[in-house]
Length: 113
Length: 113
Image (tube, rainbow over all chains, first blue to last red; front, side, top):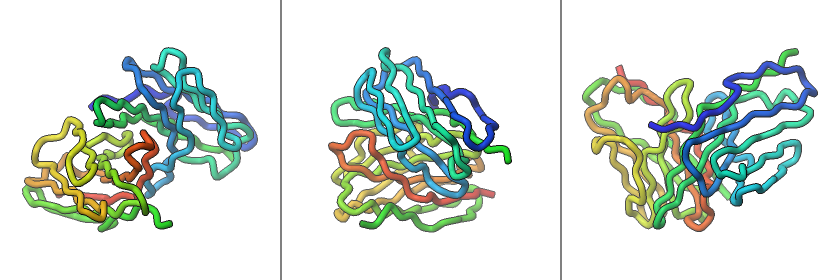
């Protein structure tokens, strides 16, 4: 099945560093979402974006909906140990009441002691 | 307010068998979506249910079927299990009008031997 392209695939950073990851698609989406998944858990919604160009923050997290509606980025400032996990972008297409969420390939974030 | 719950947590089945996975929606949510997440991949959309009817389907064969009940809980049934069906199966609930804001359960880990 289709998956969105996320980069980087993995990141190794030190605590306190800022993080930036992005997601691109060949298709246009109505909504972009960012999720975080911890081992053995389901994805947890971090940020939802509804309009092209929209910039939204949630604490230390900031995400933007690309102008072309084909991309989005997520920034994490001043990383802390609990930020470790896998981050997924997801794009939503809604046609005539049918909704389909397409996920990215994920970015694995590791914090080096 | 209770979150999304899924049962069982883990399951081991033999190729050719049938399996039923269960999901209870977050309180107040009327839409349920099911996803398959293979190891190291992002979740893949299987189908969505709204008002007890299928409301969109991904690229999965007919042996993947579902039900939604009047209390908005849901089941995912998979017939004639194949080895490649081994994955984490995730259920997500949402309000129909809150496009994209899907809240995930912890998943059921299915192993097919």
